[in-house]
Length: 77
Image 1 (cartoon, helix red, strand yellow):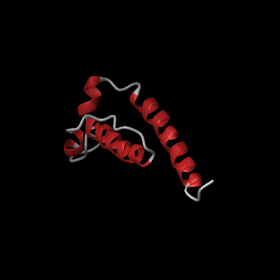
Image 2: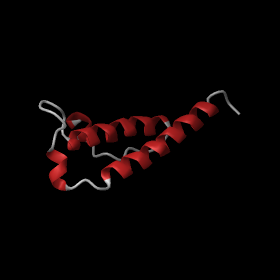
Image 3: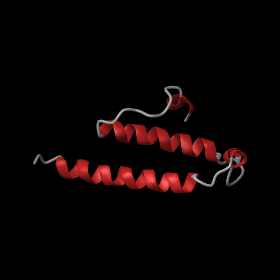
Image 4: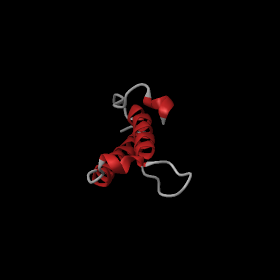
């Protein structure tokens, strides 16, 4: 086993947990919720979810997974 194997295993576990948590959080969101912000000047739920999706693409790239977000999201979020 290479020295990097434990790192990849750990990152993979975090990736799977993150997917589960993101799915649980987003499951009850309605379209009307996506434009709401938690406070004045804050980012709305759509931006937060898009930002998380892009961050997950970067982590997935580290794991050798294909990107799942649309190409224009990288600039949007």
